[in-house]
Image (tube, rainbow, N blue to C red; front, side, top):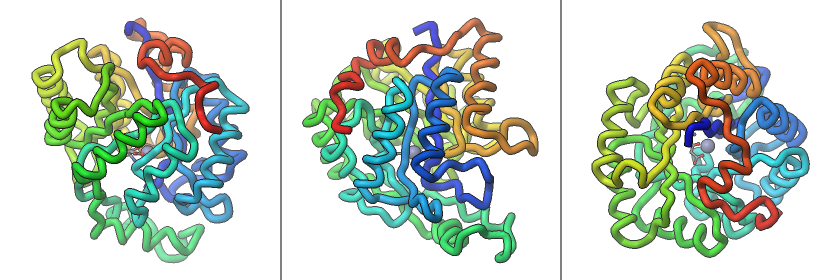
Length: 310
Ligand code: KMH
Ligand code: ZN
């Protein structure tokens, strides 16, 4: 696709409210950010649920549903729900959103790994934290293993198949492509394959051009060019814009948002839609305009907004 598919990852489960006042976590804030990002050019909105009282990541399915309904009411964008969840959530907690709310698109994380943000805690003194849960959340990730066994990936894919929810495969390292290739050979994956290269997590591959070309070479070898589509996440600043610009140049697609990076330019905190606007400006310089949600639905063979369970 000549046009660029822009995903806005609004909140995630890693960024803490102390890091930026712009992190949305109430239903209203998430819906407002989703609408602004869609207007700015995002075709896909990636969503995690947070407790509206204190911003803590949440696996409360009723709350998740309220967020999804509020976003659906305000935008035609495709909603991609997380099944990655956050620290402390079990795979059963994480996958529940699929049978419960039957989204068009949901993440499928392709391997178990260390996944840490503990160095972020060094930037804050105890008195800096907005909410009591945040410090331990950051520090505790030093001992966190993000569990995505073959059994659970298979289970997640089975749940998605039942609800005609398309998987977005989160690839944090080269081995995750081999895990996906195994799943393809097992007959558990339908085309088109939609990859999200997640680069720069502490525990996964780095966000460098060398690493991106290695991921692409491996994906081409395993699946064949043209048999998959890809987008990229660069965690942190300036990696978010470096990796997304490279993707724009190389025919891939781009994910931005406060889940992955809080700065719009050096030292300047950004709002979600400002991050989208920046990548839209960069893409325009390379003659790529943002794909609409309708174009992405056709391209990724999604079931449509009227077929979701919210
Ligand atoms: N938090 C990102 C690094 C998911 O939600 O399942 C990856 C992600 C995965 O967005
Ligand atoms: Zn996420």
